[in-house]
Every structure is written in C-alpha cells, then in structure tokens.
Image (cartoon, rainbow, N blue to C red; front, side, top):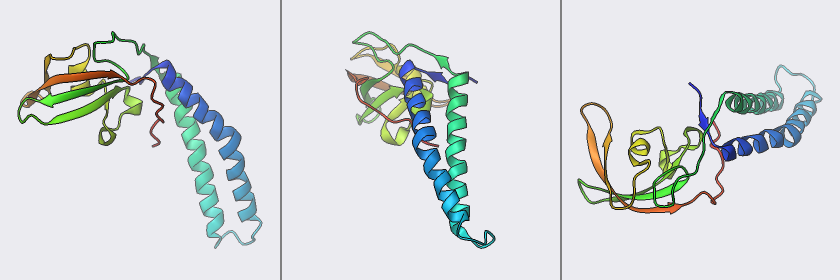
Length: 166
C-alpha cells in the first residue's frame, strides 16, 4: 500500500531528513566516538546508548526516504465550504449531542488523540466533501454505524504541524 501524501507533507519530510543528516548525524557520530574513547567497550553503557541513538536516527532517515519514494502525491485543495484535507471540522454526534472537533489529514499525520483524523478513517471518509448542516453516516463496520452533523468547517492549512515520529 502506498501512503497518500500532500506536497507539504513531502516538503516537511525532506526538511526533517536534511536536519537529521546535517545536524543529528554528526552529533550522534561524535557521541559514539567520545564513548568509544573511554576504553573497555564490554561494560561501557555510554557507548551502547550512543550507538542505539545513532541507529535510531539512521532508521528514521531510511523510513522517511522510503515514505517519500513510495508516496502517492495528492492534492489538498477543496472548496472553502466543504470538508477536506487540512480542514478543521466541528461535528455533533446525533446520538447524544456531544461536540467534537477534528482536523482531516493524510494517514502519515493522523493522531486521533490530538484530533488529527485521517481521510482514510471511517470518520474522515464520511466527512469528505460534505458541508455545514449536512448529516453524514459513519459506518465503522457492517454492524456498527452512527450519524454526525457538521456544525462548522475551518481552513487550517496555514497551521504548521510536525510529522509524527515513530
């Protein structure tokens, strides 16, 4: 499966890769070098910790490069009055009247705890293309579903967000 990314997602990933290669990598190499100079490596915790941090950084670089290489670039433009990528949507649950706010994002940026919902999730799919006042049905699985009423849609593409680290 290919990840769907916007041009901005790819730009953010490329910035992170550059930072990791030019800033973090030299710091990690220096930490390994200093720890190695302390002598016996068999009982040198600092050496193992430095090596682990260096490997973690290199793994993250490879992960981001692979994501960019295999990504499907999608457009993040939608009409002003429609729910779409990088829009913050306020919804009311028809069952109990509770209100929630979600920002619709690509799969790589989703984090439901922070209210960042993927457009591939059941809620994200249901909201896409709908307008304020519309009632949408979210089908979670064949047996479970619920209705949401869209209360507000705000453009939030200008808000700078970091890509979630894994």
